[in-house]
Image (cartoon, rainbow, N blue to C red):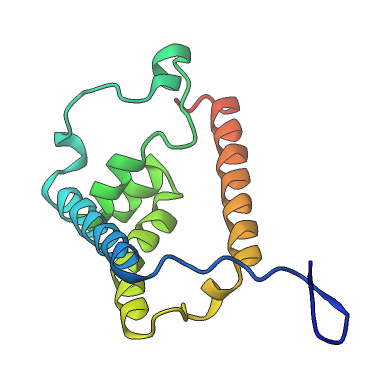
Length: 150
């Protein structure tokens, strides 16, 4: 706790976000990665993806993990096949929207450094939203396992 001149205690100041060239470089890399993911998902069709088992959980248990189907769903969304994307993994729509938002978020931060747009200013809100998303994904995964969807 810091003490003011009047003698009252104040909470410590929050750490500053990365700034300068390192922060800008990281933001640019995030935007480029998002654009790359979107471009790759537009190139591949879900049925044409290589048959490579990348999910360790699925390989070990023969059960789907909460993220199983996200790659195929991303490709289906990029090709406008929303029904197939929903069948692969309905949470892909949220992740796709997030990946679409990254380049715009980076551009906003470069325009107004240190002042993220609206809801991104409240870290507690973002953390709660992320925790709810993870909980919903796990609940949905348990539901689909119980109903025999593999």
